[in-house]
Image (cartoon, rainbow, N blue to C red; front, side, top):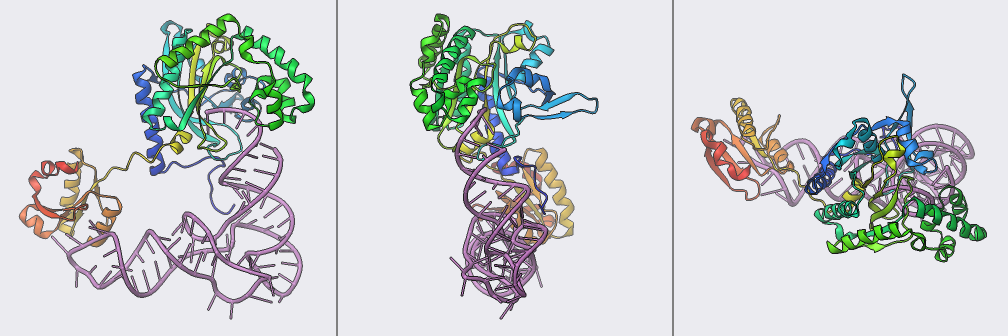
Length: 414
RNA sequence: GCGGAUGUAGCUCAGUUGGUUAGAGCACCUGGUUGUGGUCCAGGGGGUCGCGGGUUCAAAUCCCGUCAUUCGCCCCA
């Protein structure tokens, strides 16, 4: 490694990329705001147990993907691999149970020690929303609708499809898990090595396997829908009906499961074919047991997270860079006047570039490279006449303007 | 963590029976135009061939290792 390189799986967001990134965040923030979600931020690191306890001892995130460090004081802290546990912790820490329901939007970096590939980084960024304190299907519907609305606002809804499933309540899931383990145990010889391991840790995951052999076995597996309690079945039916009523199309996917332990009832993913192996752009579900499990007052919750980098890859280049007006002094006498003029225009709301050095040609070229809309030339002639020469870069036309009234005369270039 | 592919100029890439000073396009700089950008013309700068070892008279080229990127698996946003 002869050159200084960024840490594996991390990327710089230089201005071009940053504008796309910000466009996704701003679009999401504005759209979520119309659904009543206010932005909040929790720290990017938490006590390790915040994640270790909540995500489940068997999840890959906890077992091998967390960035965990020991502080000088001997505490163990972890860079957040996702944000739901942090929001839940904040809810408990701040005693917010008096203020339910709570609706939060967030955006920020997350960290997972994974093998990088397309659409997968070690430091990546997520937007997300969390709805706490609502146990009704209306909550699920609103949260999913907000996700669809954001994809729509980004112009990429048509590149995705919404996959929907229910993981039922605890009673349903425990019952189904037992039946499933039974079934797969009878077909152990046909299961892949990975899936044999999943049988112990998280048998539901086998349903999601891409292995062709596994898929054959899965095809004959008992269906979750046959093992739902009446309450869980009714709940899911209401969610589906609500989505249909507001025109949010979805596909039922009985194989859709979640990697994290705290999910129940509704699970959903907005997926795309356009990003290779990383299909999920927004994913989430209901987590009614999470807050109680962390020691807080039993409080239902539902939310989702979306990968900003993945959303950016789907979006067309948007957010163009601002086009400045360039001020080009000619000769030393004009320098001082140019500085004052630049400041006046900036205070009046113009985007202004004042070349730092170089001759006229160089400054004009630099202005062109900055995609300036126009250049204001100030030389001896102009100074003597109290004027500036305005050159429009798009049309190539030039005109004289009075220095005194420039702020108004330039209005078209603001 | 596992498997495949790839690392040559700032960027995209040429460069095979190993053989002198390693090339192109774009970008950059200078001049043609000492008060005018974009096009055009002429010229110019820039490369420890990812890094470290090995084979050889000779390595960008062959071998080993290593790091990185990338595609897939696993997992997930």
